[in-house]
Image (tube, rainbow, N blue to C red):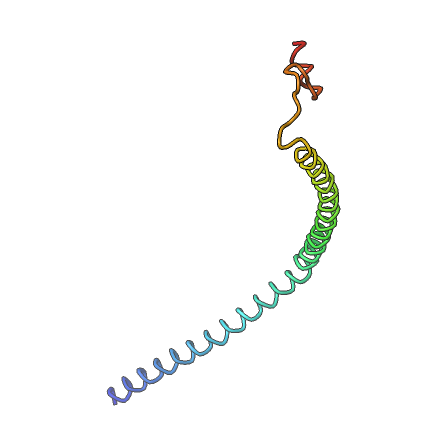
Length: 120
């Protein structure tokens, strides 16, 4: 009889351990699912609107930068066209003078900053 009691206690203990592990697994899954659901609600309510606003601001900034760069590119292109025209005129003049520049006096200054340096 004592042997049967020992076997019964061992079987009951094994069954209780198996039931405890199974219940723990179910509780763990429920807790994980509940935590994930709660976190996703928090993200959608709190963070998602901020992220959407940041995305909109970033997109608007990129568009503004693209427009600004386009205007600057056109202005630079116009300026460079004027420089090219002046260089063409200088090249034409050089060709007309057989490749020699006309004599220019050494004290001839063309920049305003050169005059400021002389006075200081």
